[in-house]
Image (spheres, rainbow, N blue to C red):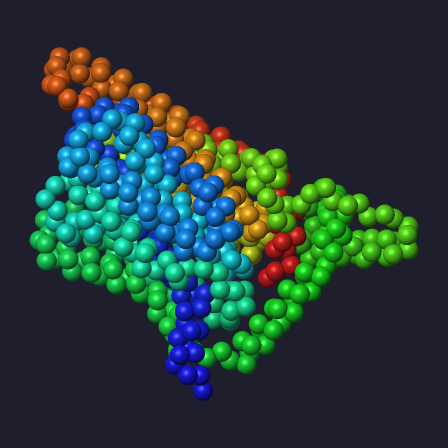
Length: 576
């Protein structure tokens, strides 16, 4: 019988506990998604115009994307150090913004606030990198679900932090910045020592699929609960006691997944069949590691493009036959096997090696167009709501966070089905969501009824799906060895697109229309008063442009699909 101390040690080193702790980190780490609620407060308090607010948004986006240091540190220091650096940056960056907006400090120049928001939001890259690196290392055979769930909770963090803000009943709106500075600091400091690689590939169990299904169930319940709470708050004026009860239910749902590792460790001893399963898998891993990689590369070169149309079983037979012939010929001295110049798709790449590959660049520029468009909508959602006459943009910010969460969870789940059942390239899922994004943006551009609700739902879910699909595809095509660096480079795509789409196009059109309306109404602005635009015209032209960009992104994604068919057939073609 295993003693309690040994059980406790097993519990602390269980990969499901690490995964759940990573979910908690992610549930308060998506601080960038709070900008839609923060920007109106900064605009009204500091007297900024829309272009200045857009510059702050770009600084936030750049800080959210530059994660090279975090990716490199994960390879040389414990993950808790990476998380601690992120905590320090978030606390001091947004803490200074709060002190400035709250007028505790004298009003700082715009560039100083840009630096503060950049530093504070850059802490998020450390949270994401630490959680994702430990996740894919502990669950190497379930990358899609793991990345989808972790990124999903990051997308949901905006709604969670907003709900916490409403409970404390702060006296002024600037206190929401205080919540952004302090909330993640408390939570992540409490769990950062749990998040680390624990040899998860040796903890594979037959019950893993059941555990993932349970997590998906919790995710759906959590999203439905939050959506119901938001609708209730929008329709009814709730008192403080009711808000506290509802938020307590939310916290319980976020903590609920810890039941999974508790049951696995304390109430579900491993059976003989599970042990035999592990032994067989470990043997297979050893066998796979002993296969000469150069032979596979030669087989890939010898496979003609006409073979792509064959069934996966026949394709594997032909490759195995050709491999055997090459081995025999090499042994007899009849052929000389070429030495590879570098890794092939499906093997481990460094960042510099990936940057010269067309597939990696196509994925990156597809993200620039599509996720840059999505981020532009998210950053300007507060102003979009105000232009349409909605007094409380927090509801829409929370709504887009919920659908962002569902999009990430769903993107990981359905893209995993595509590769597991059909051995088809994962980027086809990215192309599909880009088509849906283009349609929703066009609907807003033509001023369709209820367009703001449709854009909130579609852009939230489709933008979120990108960040479940792309990291998983990158790990499959370019390996896990430098996954942190590869992932953080890909995240540059969003601010690169937002820099132009939001900082130039959206803000320029908004200010232009606002000036026309102000000149028409002949109402001179008071000192410090910002230009404000009203009506769908403020963002309809912008959404029309973004719709075309999403269609261009879809073309790039389908190009990646065409180029990687054989790679995915080799990786997943023999799996049921």
